[in-house]
Length: 218
Image (cartoon, rainbow, N blue to C red; front, side, top):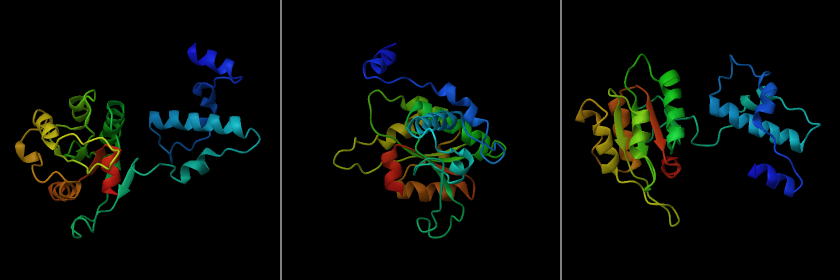
């Protein structure tokens, strides 16, 4: 009601994303398998496009073929130089920095990345916050068989401080089966990545958490 009232006061209208559901029917679902949140984002963008350019053609398959993801979202990155050539497979990067993002990433990793319940090796860093549910974010992602490195980014002048590496490690101790699955080295991203790639031994490595961390990783 608040949004509707404001829209009327400035002479516009509200467009609900459910009105755009017919637009998704044209998507080649065998080629493009979208997560629920991606469908919602696509609906929002499509409706905005329709509002601005009602006479122009909108081909969602052509759009999706360009991989319209910003850096740090569902990205595969090669780290050969960082690992002295020992890691030839890419690592998967996704900046899931809150609980909803972690739950979406967890669903994607368990369904598309994890193989037959085998371990995933995580490298995570988060920004410090009194209100951020660190335990819930980590527990949404990490399984008892997984390996886990919690690292810290170097904040810029206007960036929030990183959450301490000890905090993430302490939370993960209650999730994983053995202490050997936890990283306990220098908390910088480079060291964490090298440990993770060695620990994974060719298995999946996922870099996630704060976009400040992802920025430094890139």
